[in-house]
Image 1 (tube, rainbow, N blue to C red):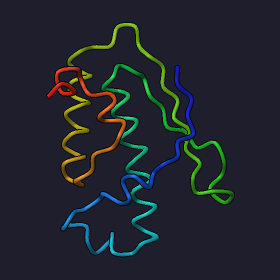
Image 2: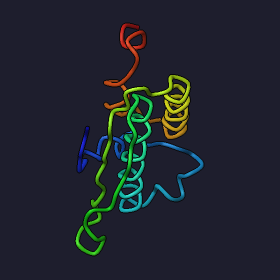
Image 3: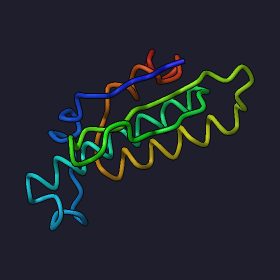
Length: 116
């Protein structure tokens, strides 16, 4: 089981690039918040791809802090390989769209990808 109040959303903030979304991402504050949400969403999808059942929960009201997402992930004993593969492919398409390479994606990459 993983319970995490993630940080380090700045990794994608430095990487994110998308011509279509340039009008939105040109504002630093918006890009920062967007990249934080993108980071947590990708983390959830990547954990699902690794066989976890994932929930993203608000644990502190937004008026107190904008960084209020808790990731709760429980490893499934019999995760369906097809579902895991589909989640991985969805996450990879999203990462390609935004031109980002989060550390968690590399850490959870299947062994064959790590060796190449």
